Image (cartoon, rainbow, N blue to C red):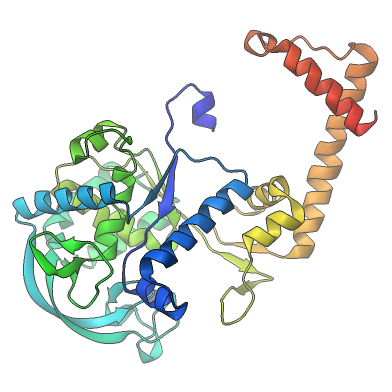
Length: 368
Ligand SMILES: [Zn+2]
């Protein structure tokens, strides 16, 4: 919004990444096909943005055929660069992260540190992306652009991963049907992250535009910012830039990893039954109050806590009392001394009539 007010062209992209084993399992648990399940979930997200009164320009679903075409073209570019090869892989897998894990980053009983569930041993014959080739270029990029990863304390984390040595990662799954088929081997599907990250580019395609990487890129790539959760930083700050370099595309200018929310000081979880339902929050308190609370109360980038008591106190104290009072008094002064008009800057003055109507309407509503 701020950039738009500065007169810049802004494209805000959001969406749902819909492939992979985790989604297929969730769908069958509800007795739906993956596609039906994704239709329901993506629609719910669209409704949520609407309820929160947050506007976006593009909503990309990774099951969109144009996205699939872009993934295919990208795959061939990386293949032509000799960055894809076939190999056996054996390791510990967290289905919730959709990621093979290094044993040394796991907790007791090989539990994933994010999901606190044991990772399962997997052995597969997969296609691999040659991430290790990009170790040096990635180190250089982070050195030359220290703002690439934000907040700065997350940069240290990323540099740590790279310093430990980057290993090639598998970009296909032999046992997962719900995904985009590997273009030159339809017995496998493309690994969900290798597919999902490309949504940032495929989303840029206009409806009637020719579907090609080149036309998507020329519609607005590279992105100025990826705003993501801290748990998916490795994909965005390590895998993604390497994939882009391999395909000869520019890198996004910044990756910002935001924190997690806790509730009443506790980690939220479905099993604990203490999740915050944003829909309920909006329906109970209104979008403005919800948006104000989280922007005001959570330091951008850090973890933040929600409690209903704090929420009500903050909204009453700031929005109702301080800002509400200010509005009330300003309108009172306008009515008393200025016949409900204001001298304002020329662009707003051009819409002067509307402005006066708004003030009159507010005065009437607030019964000043
Ligand atoms: Zn996990």
